[in-house]
Amino acid sequence: MSDERNRDRGNLFENTDRKKPSQPDMQGTARLNGVDYELRAWRREEQLTLAVAPPRGDRNTYPPDTMRGALDPGEKPAGRARSDEPVPAWVGDIVGDELAYHVEGFPKQGKSGVYFTLSFKPIPVPPRAPAPSFDDEEAPTVADDDDDD
Image (tube, rainbow, N blue to C red; front, side):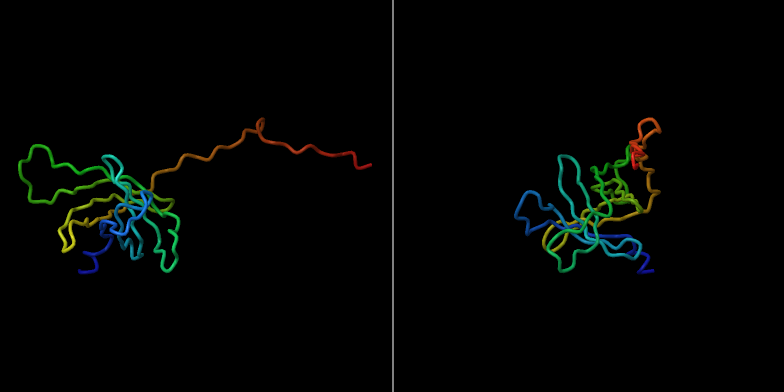
């Protein structure tokens, strides 16, 4: 039961080592479908942009993202003054080539301040737009060189 409860979850913490504006505002880790990932997030106006990548280990560079997406502020259900269910602070989808998840982020209070617990629910990967193809008329052709006499 414990494994089921911790499956497809992660945590995001403030990036206290941030030295440049390009570095993430928040970072953390997640375990999705039994695989460990690094999480990086940037605050962009009213959204939280989330990037998911394999762990970088000892390397000093970030590996390419596996999934990306934007989370919007969560909203209280309409028509209810009080609900016993927690309301997520952030809600949205992250998408990759092979995986996609609906993400909900809940604020938690820790010893060093507020952090977010993320819950990931698998969703179907949206179809990608087909790559442009050339019609026969537009396809580049190679001229035959029959002058081999």
